Image 1 (cartoon, one colour):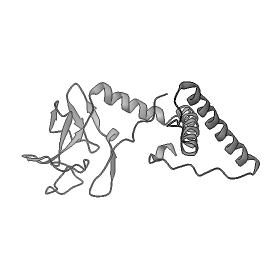
Image 2: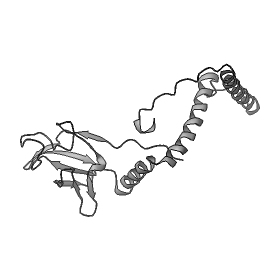
Image 3: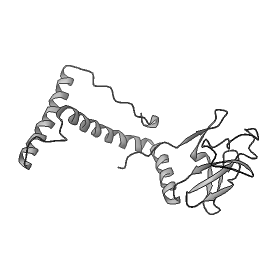
Image 4: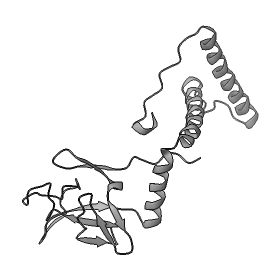
Amino acid sequence: MAGPVGLDTCHENHEGEHFTQSAFTVDWKARKVTCPEGKISASWSDSERAAELSSRGCTSLPRTAAVAPCAKSAPRRRTANGAAACLSLLPRDQQEAVEARRREQLTDEWQQRYNIRAGVEGTISQAVRRTHIRRTRFTGLPKAHLSHVFAATTVNIIRLDAWLTQTPIGQTRTSHRPDLT
């Protein structure tokens, strides 16, 4: 199982509205991006895989605004249509794969599979923190193997002791990704 992909990037306009990248509609053939307000991108750059969004014609900002209301990035340059901000995209196949993975991450099946992975990673983390198994103190495969067997036994004894004494388990660290907590 592959790990999770990052959250959909979020832009906040000057009125506090939040627009995720998925709120924009990308027409790959026409090489145009439509913002949440229905405005179409002013240009498309293949070298940077970016679409420029102009603030002209946007109803949620005054005409003198420095940037399109649906894009938070600073203006790259001032155009005849007003200031322009960029929405950066990955190449089409990669962008579509990331979007598909983000949709998949919202399913219960994916969450259950990830919970198993998180449990395994927690066990490895405990073994590393308690027994320092990343570095062996011994030379030779038989001694290193025995060291790892002792480390696994140590973790099992620590967990057995916590279970027998009803010691509460340590707090799980909160992920920086709110969709995986």
